[in-house]
Image 1 (cartoon, rainbow, N blue to C red):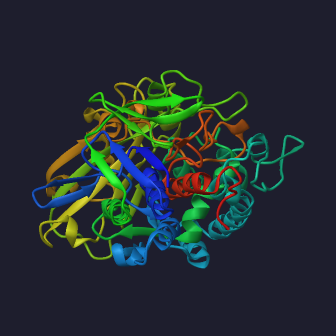
Image 2 (image 1 turned 90 degrees about the horizontal axis):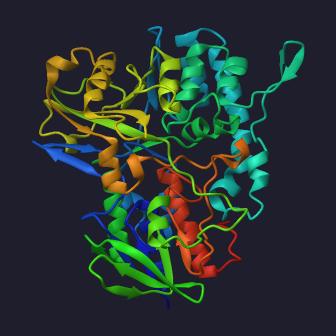
Length: 498
């Protein structure tokens, strides 16, 4: 039985803690804030409740696996999972719209043909078949196995089987999402649908590798899910599972250093000056925080994937509305920007401020737990903004509300009040500089979108969560917890779940 210190109570860190406790280790979690869940927070006021982090859950099998491996009660006995249908509604810049069915290829093809014209659905359906090939080629190395020592194989190999395209007497194959849109989808609206999955992470589709096609494929193949009461309920359930397995939590306790001896961790130092011994330390923190904790010591060796600093954050506006949620309302509506180039320039840093008319995601859960009564509605608006000082401030909230009026006619007449969550609030919750959000690991692009291994140069120190392999997103956080637990319990020979 080893003593294990876990730094941070984010979802990946708690997933690792629960698994390690079940394996017989003594696990203590040190969290600098007063609560658990990392980005999965909740805001409550006047009987309204809102998720301030992710609002939907892809690939719930990851969390089902955690609950199966750590106790008798399955996930569905701890939270109420609801499959969202339609998966999303899209309002395009030209005024057309489409509701995309959840996890139904035939349904998606029919809906796109009806909304966008004959042939649109078939082109999208054919794209999903190719995206499935990319998923099959990268699923294990990017999600289920520790990062390969020869990670350059993933960095150099493009997994997406692009269709040959003749251009200027040459045969070309799409290497980016933007090129997939232009050469394979051949419709600005289908391109917007594709690129929205990259934009949600602050990725510029013009230089995002074609293998990012796995992002819409994951949603299509495994469905989109909601947790009744909000996704904060998932964080609660994972925290309670940790407690039931004997994990100790110390909230309001900041770790200020990781101590070592003879090339191996020896424990952690706390802000109050005390020290705690540990044979293993699991750090669920952003790269800059980890650098401070090790005092400049080398964490990554030469030739390893370097730590990735995020370039995008999220601006969130919480709306308390009078009036009932209309029957048949889509849970999620994406209002696409009318100025794609301006939005991409803002995200890439070439524009001086966030886009004036960004792509906005509107979440309208059908959930009585979130409202004071049936005559009110709780709505959440989100847009991606650059992760840099001054970007995505409260003054930009009006731009999101204006965009959302396309999805909610009469919105301003119904508005009781609104709250804004800026990148600074994200930084406060997660510790990531400027509120940066980590992206999921993706192949190709020279390894630019890979994340560092869960192991480090310092013996006994492991990293977990969105800033290490396999990157950002709720499924990825749960997978990182499983990988770290496997590496500690089984040792360096661990090769992932089978």
